[in-house]
Image (cartoon, rainbow, N blue to C red; front, side, top):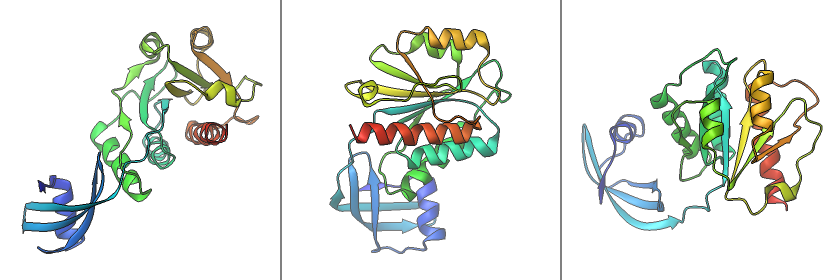
Length: 221
C-alpha cells in the first residue's frame, strides 16, 4: 500500500470525488496498477495496489535540448514533446534567448499531466537550465547530437540513428544561433546537422517537427 502525494490526494478527493473502497488505476515507474482506496480523509489518501495491469514501456532514447522561449510556446513544447515520448528535456540558454529561466515546478506539472493524458507511465526528466557552451562541453560521446539546422540541406537517414545510446535533438532560439555558436555546434564531434523544413519555423514548431521526424525514422529502420 502507499500514501498518495498532496496533488494526487487533492485530485482524488476534490476532482474525482472518490470514496474509500473506490477502485482506481495508478501508475508508477514499475507500471500501472489496479488499486483500492483503503483510507481517505481530507488530506490523506492511502491505496492498496491490487494487481498490475501494464508494464512500463521501453523508454525512448530520444532527448530534446531546446533553447528557452516565452511561456506559451515553451509550455507547448513541454506538453507535446511529452506526448511524443521524449525521455528527457534540456532547457538551454544561448546568446539570443530572451528568456533566461524556466519554472521547474510548473514544467514538471505540465509533463506529468501530458504523460497521464497520453497514456504513458513515466514523464520525461527535465534538466536544470544550462548554457549552450556547458551543454556542448558535457555531451556524452555515445550520444548523437541531431542539430535541426535551418541552413542544412541534409536529410536525416536511418543509419544516423541506429546503435546509439541516446539521440539528442538540438533546437535553436527564435532568431537562430549566432555564427560563433553555430561553429561550436557544427565542430562538435558528435553532431549530425539535418534539415527539417525549407521554411523558417518557430522554435515550438521546429521542436515538434524534429521529434516526429526522428521518431518516424528510428521506428522504421
